[in-house]
Length: 214
Image (cartoon, rainbow, N blue to C red; front, side, top):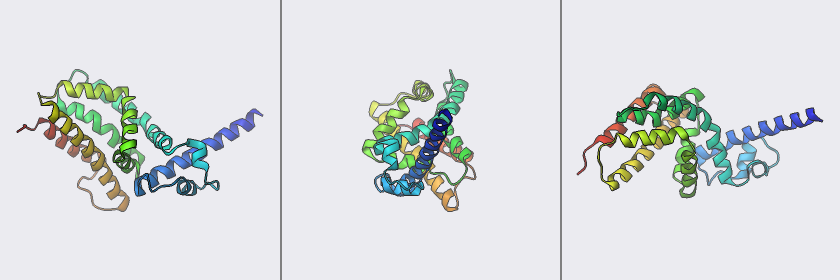
């Protein structure tokens, strides 16, 4: 009986992983709204077209599961970087803590990947963007990185901080997504590696935050 339960649990785990992989790809390539549960089930090789709902419930729950699938390795990387940056007054060090854990994770996944494009699609959906923000707030290392970042920023008007914060979010999301898309298509990219792409992105973000206001 115990062996039967173990085998069943393993099969369920495999099925869930297949669904998560298929959903991430379809959400990334076609958009969250365009990828129905039926299409995801078929892409995951599931004969039962209700498999997605059975294993994950609503689409928002599926999106959350995909985010959490990647969260642990990103969190581990960021925690190490935050620990190394502790006490720093350098804006660049804290921006790096917000950029490199994601780009290093994407590099480790190999190519093609879909996670950056998935995040960009979720980030443009008003309801799911809130979900993404909620998940980000559960990251201890990201909270520490944001705190360290804000402590070393120059004085800026509240409205300018909010404006540049949104610019930063958009730049990270879409720069990573555009590079990921180009790699998947075999197209040329401005930078040779994810490490170099992160360096260019960090340069731009530091310039954004230290630019004068008018």
